[in-house]
Every structure is written in C-alpha cells, then in structure tokens.
Image (tube, rainbow, N blue to C red; front, top):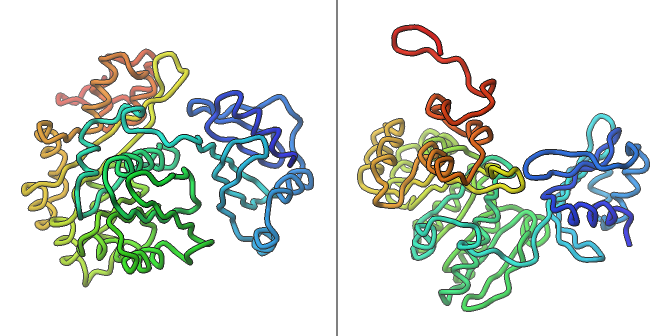
Length: 367
C-alpha cells in the first residue's frame, strides 16, 4: 500500500472533501469548506516527494521532473477514488486529493431544482454550469449525466480532465475520455466527438477560445452540449464567452448565445446552520426572447431584472435563492452573506456584524 493512502483513509473517515499535502505543514483536511490540520509532523521536501512518486507512473514522473503540473485520477488500495493535482512551488512539491464518491448522485439527492431535469430534455443547444473552484460543478454535471443515462437512450461522450465519476451505461451509452490520456485537449476531444455520432457532449471545462468555438459548433449542429466555466454569475458567463473569442466574431458569438444558449446554472456551496454540511445554492438563467434580445443589443447588464421576473420559468437570482434558504433555516446566514451581491439585504439575518460592510444610504449617512 502506498504510504500516502494512510492520509487518504484518515480523510475519508473524517468525511472531508479534500486532502492537502504541502511542505512545511502537516497534512490538511477540507472539512465543510474549512481547512484543518491533522495531528502529524510537518512534511519535509524529500518526504513528500517520495510519498507522491509512489503513486505516479513513469510518464507522470518525467512530466513532474520537467516542472509540469499533473492532473489524474487515483484509486487508493483500500478503496476511494480521488481527483489529484500535483504541483511544485517554492518550497517543494504539493498535492491536493479531491474525493470522488463511488456512487453517482442523482439530482434529487443533491436537492436540485426540478428545472435541471428539464434542461436534460433538450435535444440541442448549450447548458452551462458555472462557479468558482470547489463549488460542486462537476457533481452537478455528473448528476445531470446520470439523469440522462437513466431516462434516455443516447450516445453521451464525456470529455474530462481527469475522469472523476465513473458512469456505468444504463439506457444510454456513455463514453468517458480523459484529456492527456485519450485526447490531446478539450478542443480536439470535441472535434473528434462530432464524428462519433453523439447525442450529448460534456466538455469538462471551456477553458480557451478554441474549445469554446468547437463547443458552439457542436451545439449549433444538433447536439446537446453541457460544459463548465469558472464564472460567478449568468451575466459574467455570457460576457466571458463573448470576450474570449476574436473581435471579428463578436456579432456571430452574440447570435449563437441568443439562439443556442439554453441555460446558465451558477452554483455556490453554503454551510448548513449546524456547520456539519454544505448545501448547493443556485442562480439559474433560462434563455428566452427577452434575454436573447439583451444579448444581441449589448444590454447584458439588464439580464438580472429578467431573471428576477422569470420565476415562473424556473429562473432565480443568487440573492433571491440565498434569502429563501436562510428564511427556511437551510443555510448559515453568516456564510451566505459571502456569496451575496447586495449584502445590505442580509444584514438583519447575520449574527456576526463584522461580516456586514459599512454602506452608504440615500441621505449620505452610513449604516
């Protein structure tokens, strides 16, 4: 058994989401969003390097020697699947292990709004799940793929870096391909996928202009494309896509978004009131004629007002959803305010007043 497995086993026993290993500090566990050290000595450069190399292939060791970061999946000998990132920094090597549950979750188990199942019923177009790192985007997408797999006979091609949840085929055929192992890049993977008779293409990350362009082409040519972006709201997502492509393609990109973008889901994870768990809170944009017109006329700043009035279509703003969850006592208001756009609305719920910024009101006074 690799020595690093002992830390992973301890982390799983504690119910953590991530295990961090770095030089000069003891191993750290991510528990409900907070980083906590375990009772162990500080790791030295040579010690941690030896731990990490025990689980690397020869090719991975060569890449690490060249100063490259590594992304891969690892299955511990005593069970447990992890997404791993290995890197080097000033003091030596480091690694982060993200636990991947063996069972693919369902949308119901994640308490997702029913509208997400409707997004899975689309036959073409693009649905994006966005959020910062560690907000559960991959888990939400895995649950959507699981729903498709259980309800429709499809050919689903999933491009990931690395492969996380492993999907056994049910009604659908699921082909999981890993960037760096099976395809050179996400863009190459999408290009190949379009020649493999897909119904659904999952793009693990729309990280560059070429990948975004290929994903747009797939969505326009009769495929349902699911993907992620590291953006923190529907408006920022749309603006990021428009800005990512060359200026001469700006009008064409806006036209694509107006016609083929079906929905944007932005997700954060907020602590529950007892501090023992976290709950996914979503902002949801469902594209319609009004929003499409705002996109084509460069008025994306008005999209939040359309989301606010589109509740009957399944739309919801982040602040709306946070407030509703606070009032239902489902999340901790002191944690929720970190994700709010208009923090003034949350002042009366917060117990730690240091979290509420001093804000100007209409008469110029401060509260």
